[in-house]
Length: 540
Image (tube, rainbow, N blue to C red; front, side, top):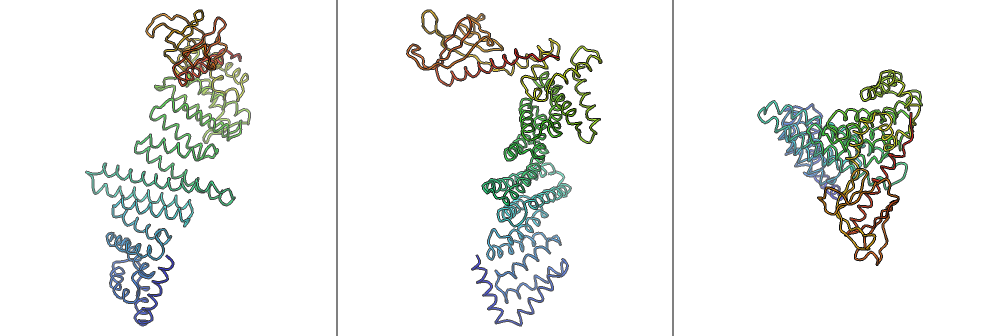
């Protein structure tokens, strides 16, 4: 590329030696004209000078490239967009020859071309040219990553404003045009994000201090672009795409504890709420709190804000069509309790712009309201109950989801409500049905039986539609669940396991190893749950 540039310069110099007087006059006139304000007269003057320029310099010379750029810029300023795009492409061609297709000079020309196309309502072409410039500057390091974010934000604003102007001209095609513009913007952001992600992961390989600063700058740019991308996707009601965007950036942040990560978690949770994906709301909140516990000090204002947000979301969810309404309310209550305890331990927390005193009062009111609305208690009894709960529990205990949730169900709510919540929890408990082979204890022979795990009971039937089981075992009474080694005495079956029970031991076999492991896993999970439930001893 350098050789091309040198050869073109030498060729221009040779022409200069032959036509020095003409060269000096022509170039002087060109420079004077270029320095004039943009106008139709300036454009016409430069066009008139083009033949003279071609006589004294090589067409693919820096002077011609600069002149074409000035012409393109002037035409754009005077709304002559077709001419602007024409001269812009000529300048681009010259710059590609002289400086290389990925040079900064090419990127500068692409920016002008993109703007001319955008103002001429050529949105798709403008987006493609902008992307080429963005990638060239990002990969070539011609500007900062924060400036790249400003560039794409400016592009978004420009294309949005231009599409609004076009809508007035094309009223009948308004909705169709707007939809197309949204797609173009989203696709542009997706490609920009992919480009930055590639650079980001490459930068992680370098552990020097300078590289770490650069990595942090790229990450900040990625977050900004991802938030803009998800906002456009949400506006376009592409909720699943927005969710995917949030999840991708959370993988990059990887429990860094940055304030942006907190914001993305909140946005992800609220998006799930919007599309009524209640299970995902709860699992995302669990991940959000795990991130908070890992990255923030417990107790601290940061973790309190995470818990307060989570409590509000689950309290709202308990008023909707969630299948686990009461359990959601119980979780909201324990998150409020956590927030209240943290507030007391660190001398107060803030919620939004409210003072610590107002925030603490608001948190306590939330706790009292939930209890008052769900228990047949007098107001003064609710106050006593809240004080007892605060004294009897620790933040660490309340953050232990399974145990603290069961404690609240068992000791805070009346029996009929605890039973309702238990039904909800049963729906989430592992359940399984299917045929297994059961060894007959006396005859040492195998019988095929239909087994069922439901709630706290393991039952087996002669057939899968039998109304009455042949046998039942309380899961909590099972002492151990063990996979057995392969043994001749279990022939013809090799995938065997046993359940040790005080009354008798069941030896069972499955057709495959995968089925056997699945049964063992389900039974262990159910056993663990009922052990946790029965071992609760904390009382007020």
